Image: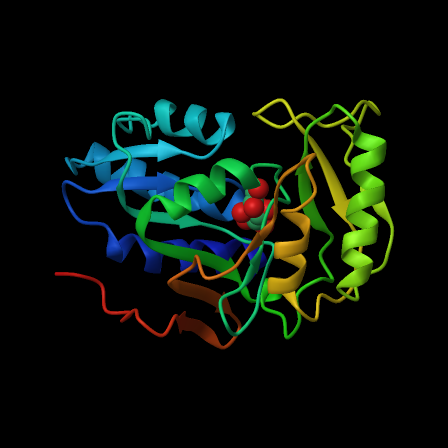
Length: 240
Ligand code: 5RP
């Protein structure tokens, strides 16, 4: 099977958790897009749900599939969010933001009663950090913010290059919120909680791609089948 087929297999497991009447957060990226496609098929078959997308790209995909959309203003509490990840460890700690949507993804996930992460097995790691940690920063004062990020991270044992994300034409990548992304090449993040706390103290940092204590279930598909990770307080069984 290819990575694409594993992503599809994970999305097919996640769809079992969808119930009529649910309010659902829709993630961003190629894996989440497979879940959105499956949801679109269910909606066409008559499933009544309403969704909050985590990016303009997902909004466009969902709208094209005829999925009814809402906002966190009208529906501040969601039943379920299904999203992908760039890395996840055995404690369901994640790095997200490879697609640049980390802030909306985190806001939507935290607004949800249950968060399911779907991924192919290449995303599963022992220690977070091989994937560069995305940090969303406001454009103003970027140089100073970068220096402070480096200092704070170094105090947490994380050193490495910090690179402004750019689009293929060389201009800075701008998030859906009008911010920049700094990709932090730390290689290993031994203490994600300490780093997360430290980065939150930098005034120009809006948020970072560490998702700690947010995911309830991980559905990871690979050559050995589907692996399910659950947080301590979540049972995997889909609801009837
Ligand atoms: C976007 C994300 C994505 O969930 C993450 O990048 C994984 O994407 P993909 O499923 O395409 O590998 O966090 O901001």
